[in-house]
Length: 456
Image 1 (cartoon, rainbow, N blue to C red):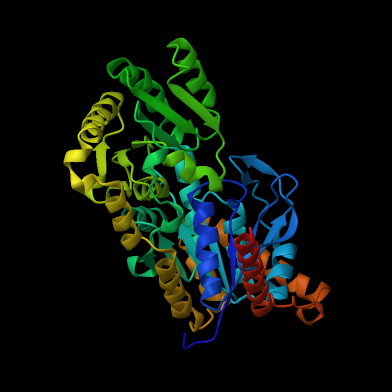
Image 2: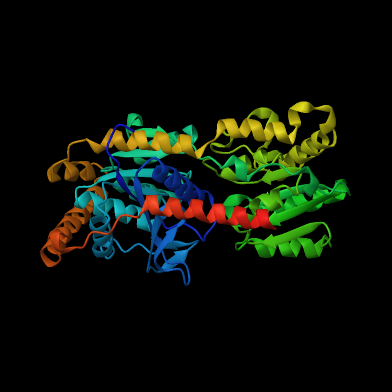
C-alpha cells in the first residue's frame, strides 16, 4: 500500500443478522479493507441473544452493545450515555478513523460526535434519500446537519444520493465522494436449471415496509396474475406490510401463484433469485438498491421504479423502469414478460452475459480501494481547535446552532471527566487478531477437507 495500515471503526445500528444493503456494505467493505492490511472493527447494537464481542470470518471483530431498539432495528438516541463505552472501544482498539453508516442510525451519529470530542478523524456514509417537506425528514435533516458540520468527509452510494445529502446538510460538494455499493459476483451466478419452464416467475426480495412500495406490489400482483395465467410471484422478506400481501392472496385466491417466503437469510438469497425470470423492485425511494444488482448478476431481467439513484445502477438492456404508480408498474411488467418470452431470440438478454457484465461493473475490492483513498485523504488533516468546531455548529441555525454548541460542549466536558475517571493509559489495549495463524489454519482445514473428499 505504501502507507501505514489504519485502525478503522465502522458504526451503525444495522448489521448482521439483520438483512439489508447497509449490512451487506458494512460486512463486505470491511472484509476487503482487512485484506488490504487495515484493522477493522464494527460496533452495532445487540440482536436478541447475539450480544458482546464476536469474531466473524477473516478476523472481523464485532461489538454488539446493549441498546433499546425503537423502530426497524434503529436504537433509541441517548446522546451522551454511549460515550463511556464508545470511548473504551476506541481506545482499546487504538482507532484512527470512525466511519458511521446511515442517517437513521442513532449509534452512527452518536459515535461521530464522541469521536470528534476525542479528536479522532470521522467519515459518514449515507445510504438513503430523504425529503424536505415532512416533519420526520426536517428533523432528521437537522440532526444530519449537526453531525456532518464537523465530519471530515462524507460518502454517498450514488450521484443522486450525493446531491440529496449536499442539499440536506448544506455541505461543500468537494467534501462528498461517491462510492457505490457492490456484490460478490461469484456468489450470484445464474442457474438455468433452477427455473420452472412451466411458469414465468417474478421474484421480489425486500423489506415489507411502506418505503419499499409494498402497497404498489399488492395492487399490481392480482392484475398481472389475471392477465397472464402462467405467471407466478415469489416474495421474500418480512415487515409490517406482510399482512397486506397475505390478505391480497386470500382475497384473490392466489395461494398457488403467490409464494410468501418470509425472512430470507443472506446465504439463501441466490437460491431464491435463480428461481425467477424477472426481478421486481417497487421502492418509493432508493439511493442505490443493491438487490437489483444481485438479481441482474443471477440473470434476471429487472423491473424497477425510477426513483433516486436506481437509474445509475444498471445498463438499460437489463432493466425496465416505471414511475411509482400502479398502472405504470403493471405496464412495465407486461413489457418485461414479453421480453422474457422472446429471450432466445435476443442474445443480449443471456443470463451468462448479464452475469459477466455485472461482474465487471461492481466489485467490493474497488469499493474498498476507493474508501481507503478517502481515509488517507483525511488521516493527515490537522485537528481543528474547539472554537472552530463551535463555529461550525453555530452555523446550523438561529436556535439549533446554539443548541448544537451546547451539546458539543457538554460532550467535550464529559470526555474530560471520563479521562479523569478512567485515564487512557489505564485502559488495556486489545490484542491484534493473529491473521497469519488464522489463514494458515484455514488453508490446513481446506487441505484436510479436500483430502477426505478425495478419499471418498
